[in-house]
Length: 406
Image 1 (cartoon, rainbow, N blue to C red):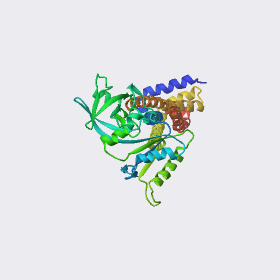
Image 2: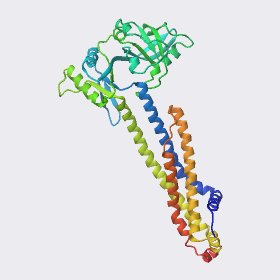
Image 3: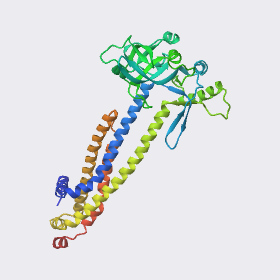
């Protein structure tokens, strides 16, 4: 007697429905394994896509020099030591003397309260030269940028972030109005388009840009800067530029070989690498957890199929009497174990997609789907086959007469 694939599938699904409680327990391990693989694969792809997008927003080919030194404070924590040795003259010398540089923008930043009428908001204020708007890809929704002439004259102008505008000027046009930045009246000349949070976790929409000379003299009263944005020409290695800048700054600071740097240099690649290391670590943990879940799910299917074989001796005997061969018995029980694994896999995929949507909406990640879906489904099928082979072979050992009368 020959059986069609539809017959095997119908018997498999009938057994699934009749013994739904035990089958549900058997497929849960597969479901959780597939769910974790699918969800993390999709979420990590979304995170990587967002990182690439944020790099473009931050600026192209940027090397950042920061006064002070970043050092490790434990296994993962990092601390930053402040330094006052980085000067405006250093930025000028870098622009004049180091080849391969498009633009150099010195900056000084601090957190200050900003007030307009009765509205008060703590903002991140950065004193910068006007070239920052080009190298940081900063767009405006209204108004203009401050000019190089206004910077040279130390005029108190400001380009504000979108949240600063929303909080201080609800329903008002801010252009031409004055806000108090650390008690200093400052004229608003432009409002930035929304940019979101950068790699350091700083909300760019709570940013206020002020001409550097004005900020250093009239707001902070300092003679040093906190950092320098260096935009590198296309074709130059950012890693090579980091080394060049390090040697150059040590030279102009007259530092001896045994002295530690009083500055830090990093690129977007360094920040991305740190974030991707975290993603890789979670990926390894996810794979370990999924492997354990697959093993538990496989063992569950294996145990349920063995139990099913022992309970269905009569069925096996009848089918053998009416002409079924051992091959037919093997195919039937293998079909059932594969169906159980596939139902668990499909349930895991659906759950994984649901988790992906929830996390991406909350985290603001783009929807990017990974190949983990197909891989997980393929593993589910393999687990189903492996878990069903031995029970199926055991089913063929029952002789028809003994099975009917046992």
